[in-house]
Image (cartoon, rainbow, N blue to C red; front, side, top):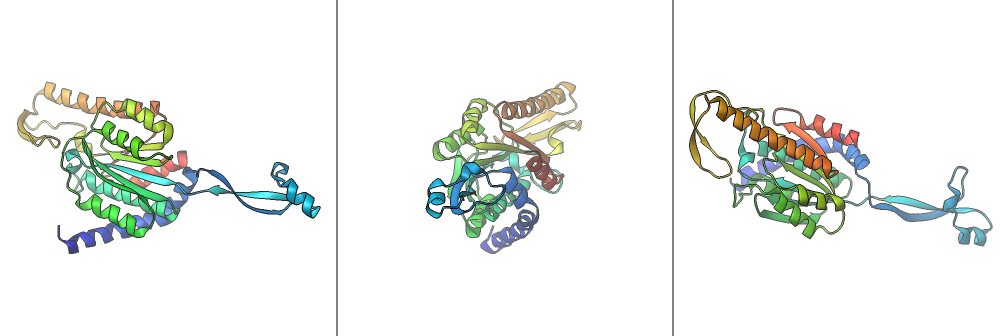
Length: 287
């Protein structure tokens, strides 16, 4: 992709996702994710209804009139976007690939965080850490994140969510809001998710395509494994083949839901042909 085309794509995504974050998400995001606590702001005269526990007795004695300490929410947070860029994200059947929706969701989350003056960091992963951008603030930083989401070419096509969560725990020492955006066609991440969830506020956003759920009966078909690149002939007319495919898919879906639920992490499921806006807003409001 040449520079002109890339900048055009970045701008298009910025216009769409910034509008969403400005008008819809930023308020819900602020309400859903609290700051680190309360920090002292000022001392003022006592007013009817003030909590007497906040009276500053030193100032009160000095002025011979009741004064209270005023506290504000310490808002600044860090958002970490953990984005799966393995081969299976390139699947799509409705004129849009999963990775396109993943990019839009990540950009919307990033602009929502920017609206609240929070830092945003990015981890792109396959079965290894492909790219790490440390958390920073600002529009130019968010635009860099969007550029990487659009054009970054992974070294590997496989997926290892556990590896990505280990990296998160090792690099992010303070509590962060973490969105793991993936199709979650992966296993064996229960232990690492449990450890990461004790420190961070984690949400798994599962992006999937309806055509992945069932294998159509269309006879012998050459199929490419998106995560290995291997091609093999598959007899889709076989009931056993179709049953085993659906069982594998459903087993991974159950594992995703149960693992996140047991760890106290949040879950959002959105199909590529659905409105992720509706799904995310519903999730924010339910928190």
